[in-house]
Amino acid sequence: MPVVEACAPFVFNMRVYIEDTDLGGIVYYANYLKFMERARTELLRTLGFDQSQLQHDGLLFVVHSVNVRYRKPARLDDELSIVTTIKGLSSASLVFHQAVVRAADSMALCEGEVRVACVDAVRLRPKALDAIFVQKLNPFLESNC
Image 1 (cartoon, one colour):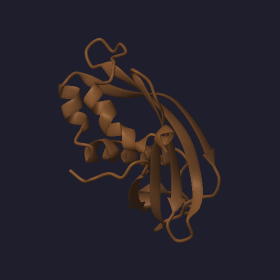
Image 2 (image 1 turned 60 degrees about the horizontal axis):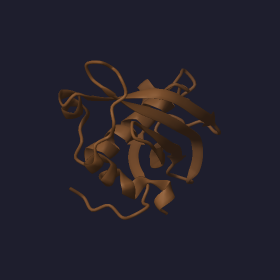
Image 3 (image 1 turned 90 degrees about the vertical axis):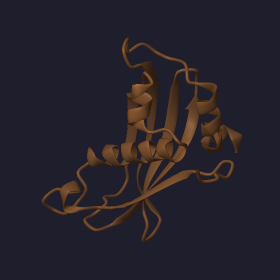
Image 4 (image 1 turned 120 degrees about the horizontal axis):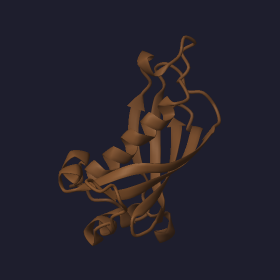
């Protein structure tokens, strides 16, 4: 497992493909949420948690709420970095701050806050985060900086 520096954001790099865009070659607004979802999933994977294993273990992460601000459009073939930190952490939820940044000029194209609830996979009721899980998330917590 990779070593993570304290207070380091997680960065997921990707390219915009034709399937991500509208007829004008501009990224369709809802796809930014998909990009952010992929980055959160890869952050968990980097920490040793994959979604299928968590589900098998009876744990699901469900999006509770999203607040997004669109600043500038991403376009076909742009290289993007989705920069993720954890803004808040409670016993059964996480608040992620995410920014979609164009690599060519470091322009923040879209920013969002995503609250994710931890729930029991069977009952779909809130479930407390495991202490080991929380410990592995600590390097990405903004409050630790």
